[in-house]
Length: 298
Image (tube, rainbow, N blue to C red; front, side):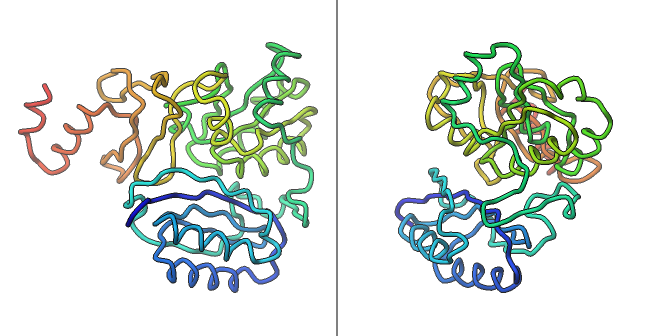
């Protein structure tokens, strides 16, 4: 493999035959030797795939050749060549599992009733105009926000995307309903749905960061309102936008500052945790019953 690349994209559009799209996407990825995760639903498609740059370009060209996907916003990033263990292409009721497929309505223009899209620069303009009145609302899981988030953001206690609807319905965020709320997530897909769910529940002024944190990082890096690292759903775990990234995470084991996320074996199975490199080594040795690494780390 010469130059490994990863692409992240989504399209909300009505799909009459999601399983046919799944079979086609599976065949295109296999043809070009790509791995990653693609979810297809009646609401559209959401995918992250990686491989050699030439093969990824061919995949993107083939995907955009389908009329409903021709305007897909493709976000590119550098890969390692071993970012995904396998290819997974599945059909699900939602391309983002909030657990309320019947609440989500889409047409050829995307999600119906979603928040107003704001470019990264337009977000800065809103903050300049409205100041502390603006609320950043994290649309990701807590583990993602632990290593990177917008300054002063509201981070819901969500362990999975399914937690957001019960949290919104609990009234916990009702005090924000009359304030300008900017939702954000990794690439924007979760906020397409989240912003519509918030508006349906009485939030009056809801925005979404267009292109998500990825697009914001491309424009402002670590010299804007973002602080920390970006959690990603592949073997890289996190990516940074500059050489002067802020360290906002805290190791769950020893409390040391770190932006590293690791698979964390525990009694409940395979989980994720913010762990510094030293504790990652210790946890790894404990999982294999090897005490040498722990003694060295100490």
